[in-house]
Length: 415
Image 1 (cartoon, one colour):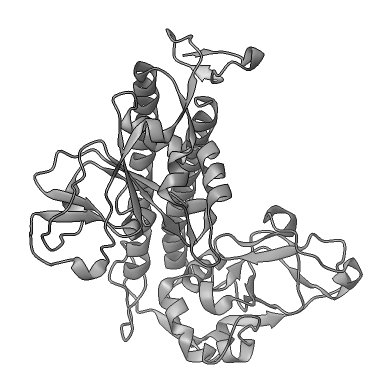
Image 2 (cartoon, rainbow, N blue to C red; image 1 turned 180 degrees about the vertical axis):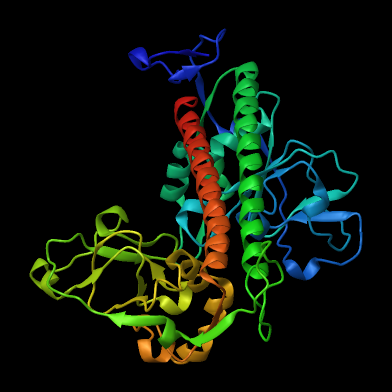
């Protein structure tokens, strides 16, 4: 691939494949596509048997149930009827969305199907001409330029919509068909790599969920389903007020201010990407948080409690807890316990009537009972889960990097 500057306003992208030097054209979609009839078919037409008819519903486009339709198995079966049918290569857009970002979200039919496929509720179906590659059109609709156009043309207050006529008025940057094909194949390859990494990440997250269910005792049991070799003793049970203690140390205005996040626990406020205003004069009244401590925050009933691996200060509205006896308890073990789905579900017993903006009191939390093993078994459990966390974080970073690369290609390979 080579790089080429856009000189004298010639329509050429920043990045091109070798062998292509001609300027791109700009053509209206109306001259490159033919409308295929869409039908206002709601979920009521779906059937639970193989009817030989299937449809593309706008809701399935938004939820990515359908995207690149290489197999029609995910398409719902519908009642037979006298419809104009979709063909391989047709591009289907959702003409309604609950947010501007997803206006005209596309899907493309790549399957050679034995079923009759119909364009359903709130969709716009386009059939590209021989001058336009279907996948190229699909990726152009996903491009930043078309997204910007869709947001500008979209209408509505609660549900945003775009008409087929406005879609077809879009000026599409168009290279020769051979260059279109190369671009779409490369982006498709990127999508395949991204999908592979997403599956790996999903598998790791599922694995961790399984470990969380198997490494801790179920309700009414004294030992977990899975144990490490050498551990046979029953787990001890204590009230949380015996395991944790409420701590409140103030007068440290020089420390960094921490905020609670559901995914990463306590993090420096200047790293969360949100400009939260606070009065620096009040920092003297903020509570000190040390590594290995826990914070009950204002949304604690939704995402567990926040663990802190850093030192700083936090809002006096929060409750800071530390372990009463660290010779018997490992902070990393309790980090996993307090963010586990099992614990979050148990919070229902002490959060009835609590809404956003109020935190669980330490006295209410103190009534909950917990089971825990010896320190050595706690270490073994936390080590395994920490390894999984690091592996998940690594795969997430790789996935994010691939998505950024693809986004960059969308910006630089299109005019």
